[in-house]
Image (cartoon, rainbow, N blue to C red; front, side, top):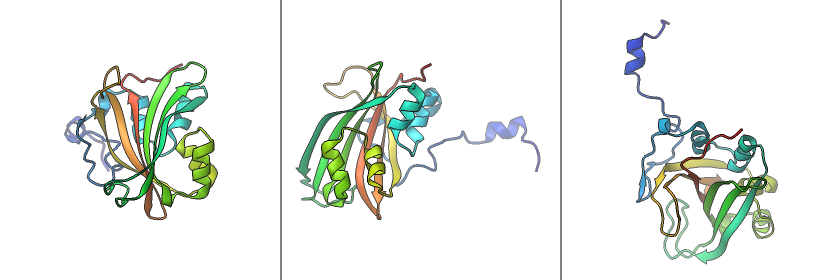
Length: 197
């Protein structure tokens, strides 16, 4: 095995840490654009590829407790099938939005919007959703549910009506248990989110 020459290095395709992570087509929703991973900081790259809980990662990086502030949560019935959740029209879902905020600094680290299929959730998860303001990863861990994450897409989200500031870097993934998707989660992070001392 020889040593790579400068010419070899220059002709190799650039490394993409998400290349083997995305499930399915990776097609972004309308309004999302591509993100150059080399142009964002290491914290954002880590948040896009993590298969652990984002809240735990943010706690370790920021060295402060992270509060999960529920901004809305409602129980609705799907009026059409949900492709990514493999849920039919008429299925009951919980739509939940939260903000992840540093409890000491008040720093806004992230937002998350989730759609959960009610009939696929164990009772322990439903109870915690109603009674405990914490992240979904923590709720699933405390319920002892075996799951896996499947990242579907990531990109830059266009600024939405009612949201001030620049576009945000987002990723969408689903949590699967027993062969069926339980929930679809879209996390969004400020474009300028950086490591802090």
